[in-house]
Length: 138
Image 1 (tube, rainbow, N blue to C red):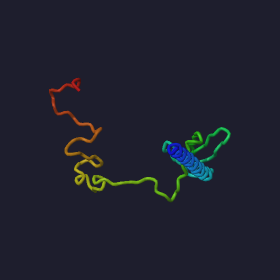
Image 2 (image 1 turned 60 degrees about the horizontal axis):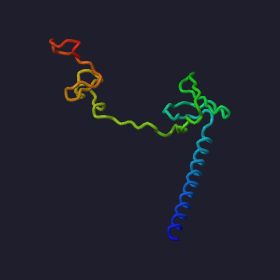
Image 3 (image 1 turned 30 degrees about the vertical axis):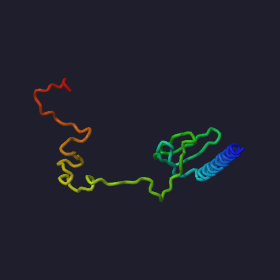
Image 4 (image 1 turned 90 degrees about the horizontal axis):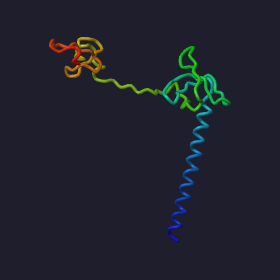
């Protein structure tokens, strides 16, 4: 008898949790839908920012202007959120190399190139100084 009561309580608690979370999710979706009006700055689910031009409920599409004169048509579900102009979405951090003001302080003679303990930066071309090594040995 005790086990069946515990099982019933667990099932009721699980159902209540599911009901509460679905109501909360629907409320959040309704708030986002209210903010998705033409002219709003939006971010798409894949990180592209633009201005919402129109939403077609029949075709479930939205037209977003990502650059002046460039309009893309996307599925309406890709509209992930409305971007607030006053909020700073991008967090920038400065590295010690970037804070250095002169190339000598950064450890290089070329501006914009940073060497790591004498090693070249990834992707930087280095001339081979060994004359006995052939190009085909690479």
